[in-house]
Length: 384
Ligand code: SF4
Image (tube, rainbow, N blue to C red; front, side):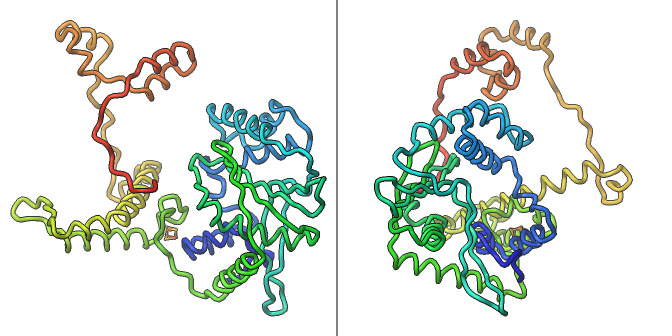
């Protein structure tokens, strides 16, 4: 494979490790001058927006209000109403944690470090650094801040093992030879800031690891799709055989280990095989998610087809009518049932917000009146 501009970033390497075919598709899009569609997805663009707001607040000395507006100027199509408050809160957190007694070395700065040469050309590791400071009272003492806007909290252990921080540590020492000591801060804006450090031996180790990863990418002349957690969000999903193959395999495996009982075809689990079933569950859930996403995308495409094309594929649009109770019918139902009626109809927070979103005081009063009711607890994997 050929790398655009002979450089690779940590997210490229992670994409390759998830699936070489998706990586190849992504770099082809880069080479052709456009970004891969998933690079600009509503779920990921909040991170870009808050990074931009923080960058501008610092670089152009903007107020929070101005920084939020500038983030909207660039990312408005990806930002929902609740993102305004999130941007304000995250900016306020950034201001609270601002560093004193330092001078700014880098602000959203791209650095690149040579890894090795191949065919006379140098291959670089590239990284974008949110912020690098140098302590005024201790020249050569650097601080690297990596701002994270994710809702998913990372533990200290995860931060110490984070490959991106580790690789950036090496890159900072190479890019600024005057750097003698470095503290990195993994700043989770919704939670807390976790400091981490690396030794010279660890820097040497990550550099060799990066080189081996990138050589593996360059040596791969026949990338194969690899089923992974991100398949449901992959732009290649509708055409990719891998999730379907994995799902078929999972279904075949399931019927081998838990054959449906005759004659009613009901699935009965063998208590002696419980270990096997539990071990299969994560793969089955992944396959199910990918297949559901695939089904939703294909159905949406069928819906958008001209009628004749849809019919050619053997589909039609079903009737749209469903039973519904008008306000008048609901009033009558209440007359018939009395207060039992309230046990029958159910209000949800989502519906209240949808209906009363523009009347915030009324909406908030109603939402505050909801009480927690006991439910069957969902099954969640440890650590999630
Ligand atoms: S759907 Fe999954 S396996 Fe197929 S290309 Fe995308 S990431 Fe790879």
